[in-house]
Amino acid sequence: MATSTKQNTNKSPWGWLAVIGAFLLTKAKWLFVILKIGKFATLASMFISLWAYAVFYGWKFAIALVYLIFIHEMGHLVAAKIKKIPTSPAIFIPFLGAAIGIDPKKIDHAKTEFFVAYGGPLAGLISIFPAIALYLFTNDPYWVLVVQLGALINLFNLFPVSPLDGGRIVSVLSTNIWLIGLFILIPFLLISPDPILILIFIFGLVTWWKQFKEHTNIAIMKYEETVLTEINKDLRFFVQNESDALNDVDHPGNHLSVLFVRLNDRKDKVNQFLLRNSGFKLPILQEKKRIEIKKAKAEEVILKNILNEMRMREGTLEVDPQFHFIITSIINKNETKQTEIRNEIERVKTYYQTSTGTKVKSLILYLSLAIALAFMLVYAMNILESNQLSNF
View (cartoon, rainbow, N blue to C red):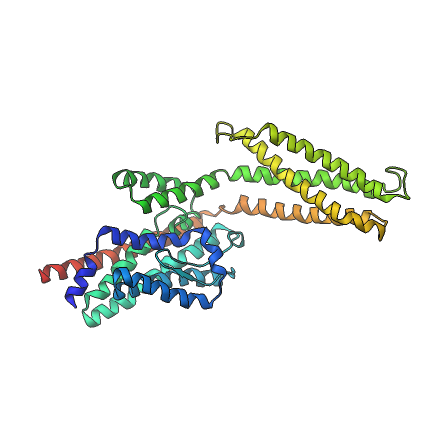
């Protein structure tokens, strides 16, 4: 038993990094597509992962790893359920870990994101206690290995860089902490350019940049709202002046044609602008032009959708000569879209706004969890080191 444990505890750093990397990659958003398989896939994928890990690390190590990952992910799932946020079932993917799917738009505030993110490492801490009890009862160093692995995985995951749980947790304090975390990573990347750290850095940088450019997204959404307002103004004019617009009451289809031509002309102007400004534009240095292009693309999509609907509805004029019913339907859809845009703008603006009291409580909870996991890690390392010395 002692020999087996010693072999496991003397794994190379690459083995440990591979384990951590498997867990970290559970945060990749592109895995969400896989999560739609269904609840039954959780158990099946768990056994597949268990077998895959066992091939490389042995059954005992594989069981410990799958157990720790499972409890961590269940912590996120329970936290999401408490907040009544819909999730996908947990899916295990060999050497990538496990993941549950959560639509970011279902999380309305950073406080909720903190709660859901905190649930994983907290559950990870709780998952260590049974291993401690089993070690105290059996004196088997294997259970200390479970404690060490669990503490290491969850403590590392508290590093304040998004998309790690730590990055999502500290977002309730300030997203500027993400940038600090990235700067802290740079020396480690220079000293030891580990692929996992590089991957974390890239994910973190992209997430920080996206948040840094949030004001641009708000500006584009406001422009979309303005475009919809202008279009609805034109549409209402034709509805309200149906009999006078072209003095052609007997041919209401002409009214629709005039609307179609006007909107199509506007779309052509937008397309011409995009053609004149095609090609790559440098971020920051050509930021103003980049924003103009994004606004134009958003306007193009709006106009294209409205024109397509007018084409589809044009045939109904023979049945319903009152064309304003068609236009009114488009107006209503535009107003619904405007409401969605306003709500999203408000959500984005207020997402990271928290009170001083909330920040203080969140910081205390974050540091307390990190300290507890660090204590568990040191505790396990000391026991394993003592066992190695006694065996020597």
